[in-house]
Image 1: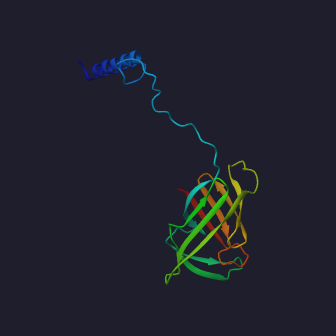
Image 2: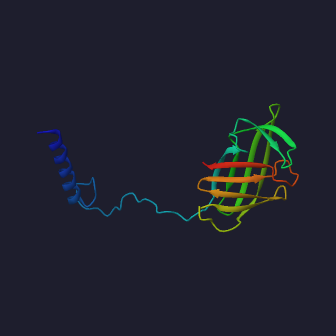
Image 3: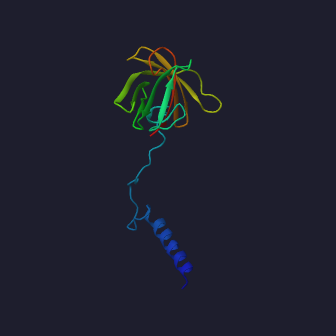
Amino acid sequence: MSARTFIALGWALALGLTACSGKAGNVTGPTTDPGRQEPGPGPDTGPAGGYVLERINGSAPGQLVTIANPDGSVIGLYRFDAGSTLELDAKQAFHLTLRYTDDKEQLGIDDSGRYDPAGPVSQDGALPLTFASAFYGDAFTAVVLGDIVALKYDFDGDGQMDTSFGFRRE
């Protein structure tokens, strides 16, 4: 008997036993056990979820990045930690944790507050968001596209959006 014939007979036998049992793998008879049920798609949580830092003004975490105001005045030269995170919950609260160093000491920014849609989803699937900081009292904007959140942030607190951050969903 060839291997191909043997495999075909094995499948025929397995299908026959499955047809007789009422449940695959149970050759003793029908059962009322529905077996493992896969959950259906849950409610759409939109952008809610955990995100990790992927880009800072076009640079990757771990690289030295010059942060500057729109007029070109330098704020500082920093190295951002890949462990920096953005958490968006389904109730539209956010928590931003930026960890970075100036190569002399460890620094960080923690910000939290609320985010809201700032308009409809665009044709390319981008969702604009507005963030309102409960901690600093300011606001900033972001766009969610797929598993990426890109935001403009006032890093030095002078009222000018000076830094772009990109976060990828964990």
